[in-house]
Length: 101
Image (cartoon, rainbow, N blue to C red; front, side):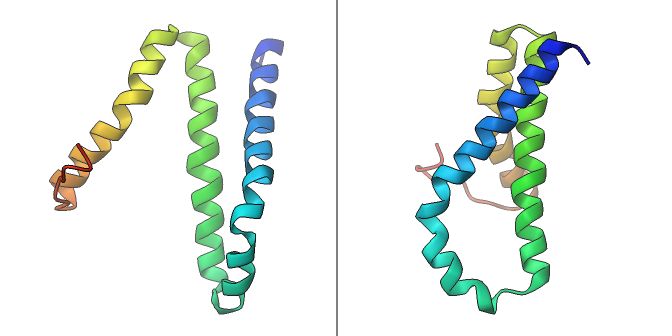
């Protein structure tokens, strides 16, 4: 990896870490209150849901910015919710609502 790629990955990681630290006080009281009733399997899935999709998405977007134009990457980023809604409607029988549109 080149130096610029390493710097980009470090910045993305720092951003994710700072966002987690600053948002922690917002949910910490509820988490402490609910924690005794939560199984270790659930904690594992929560950790997976936080780490894998979030970090993978940020890192792949940072990687894509190196190889594609910013406008192309932006189009893919902004079309993802629309594609997700269409896939949910088609495969999960979700019903589109006015709020969704």
